[in-house]
Length: 308
Image 1 (cartoon, helix red, strand yellow):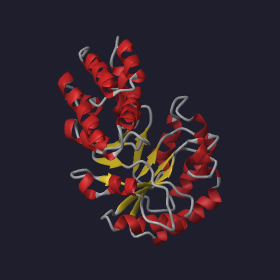
Image 2 (image 1 turned 135 degrees about the vertical axis):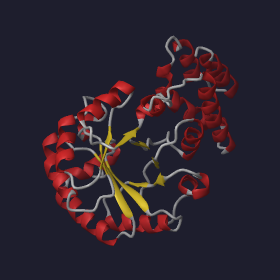
Image 3 (image 1 turned 180 degrees about the vertical axis):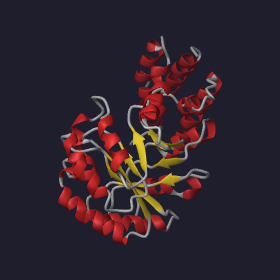
Image 4 (image 1 turned 90 degrees about the horizontal axis):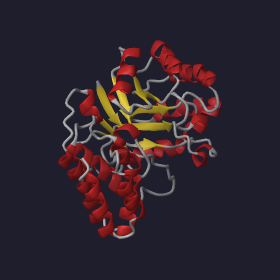
């Protein structure tokens, strides 16, 4: 089985990726949170720092692009090639209303004719391999049959399917019937993504689709960094390793020198997922959420780790 780390905006940054790669079972691929094309300028300093090879040493990193404009997508691919990238990922899955309102992400799925013209051009002109991360439709699972037939027209490097429609966001159960259709009909390699939070969740997907060779983990791995190791039968949950992982993220963010307030915001985002591991830690988690000074945050986090 191959394992991928899903791109979560604001969380799976280079700081998080490098800390995870060091302390836990490495992923086969890591994906950047999406890049939005800018035709008249290069990457921002923040974007460059995210994609620089020297900031991602030892990681197989795939930049993700959010676009419904072929010109902008192709321009971004060329910029990424200057950094040595030969594979990119097209985001057709983001369910955010601000993204969808511009017919990007999963919103682009509602315009199949425009999407086809877009795919025609990028797959004929881009000098890079292109994978796609997709939902099964915008409003209804019935949209997926047409969408899948469209994807089958192109040499998609990998088709990463989150089997929900946009309007589901992250509610309702993943539509495994739709994924089964993809397993049966797709001409491209498949990767499953969606609601793998535990070993039992993984086994349920594996039993349903024994031919599956790749899964992408997002919220599940942020909430339980041991998850891949547990799946592989190597589940050794040392409290010291989790604290070392946390401390590396904290100190690496502090080293970026953008202020403790921003660092605390980043750490609190991670705790929204990671906190679920700490049964009986509600008091300490509340202290973390309320912390406005680094000392208060550290004290609360240390007391939480002491529970493990």
